[in-house]
Amino acid sequence: MAQRETDRGRGRSAARHGQAALDREAEELSIALMAASRLFVAISARALASTADSLTLPQLRALVVLDTCGPVKLVVLAATLGVNPSTALRMVERLEALGLVDRRTNPANRREVVLSLTTGGHELVSRVLTRRHAEIRRVVQRLPAPQRAALLPALNALTDAAAETAVHPHGTARADRGITDNPVDPVDPATRPEA
Image 1 (cartoon, rainbow, N blue to C red):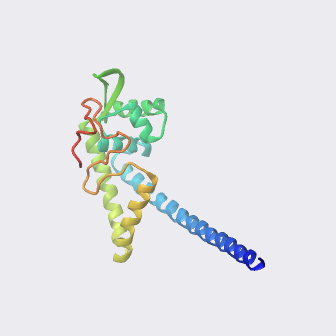
Image 2: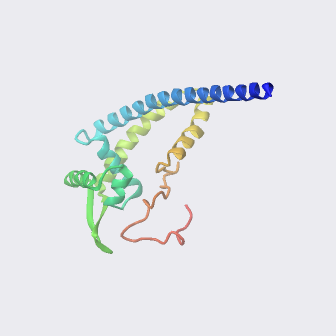
Image 3: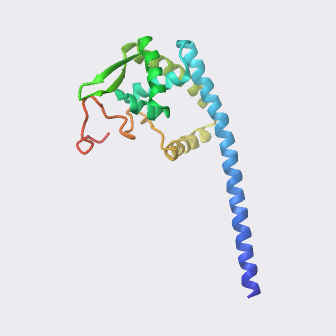
């Protein structure tokens, strides 16, 4: 009986130790990812400032969503950005005034607003993303080959774990939460060809 109690105590102690190790590892990873996040925000800010100094990073994010997934309904844009529709509307009004976003009433439902990028909006997103991509590529090229090889599956796993809208490496948007459906010309998901 005493031996069983000792074994149970050891088992609980090992479980606590194992959990503490997992907690430390998660904390270390969180700190490293926060540092990487600051790096990517800085790279995005530099790319944006070099092409359109009057825009903010949240506005750029809205433009990228529209570029990747548009046209979309205002409520879908708001949900994707994690803001309320009135905040998204104010952002869209500013972007529309700059000639970057086109806002139209959905002919199928006159109460809905459908958003898409203008040619100028597409060109701006392309310039910013090209600059950002070039800077990130320079950083990645400084990594030794084994670290680069390990980074790709780790980042893909992180994106999947976060359930973020991802973009296929060759540029096609992954259908996620209905974002890629064209609200003006909806396609039945059952008949949609696989990407």
